Length: 152
Image 1 (tube, rainbow, N blue to C red):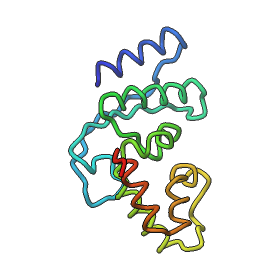
Image 2: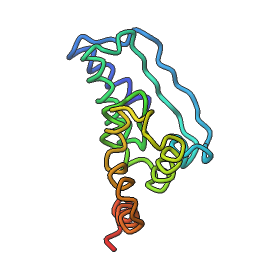
Image 3: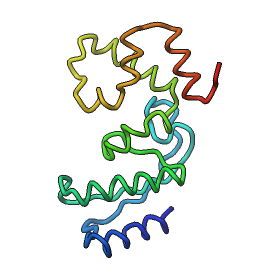
Image 4: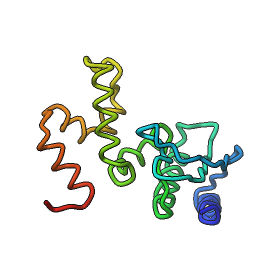
């Protein structure tokens, strides 16, 4: 994965004249089954976390999305708050449906009027919020089976 990250960085430097100006943090995450939306819920992992001084830079955003796609090919999990576009488009591919469902149930109990549900989290959990609105167990079982690849 590190080699692929370096190749992507080099490609952006050559093709986009984009260089990462800040150090890239590489760190280990121990398996964390206590947190429902932990990226390391299913096992220990290594995080590769590039940063940029200008998060609004369109080339930086393109780099983050490209890195997100490369990381997914290596079994990576997008960080919900850092790679927003990648997290939204890949949430159901990389996070356990039961964990998402449980998180949203707890979130609704703690925030029944959705005061803390901003536009980003509405987009991130869009399909799940649609299920939660209906509140039907049947709908929950259908979508859980669908995301696990079952046809029943």
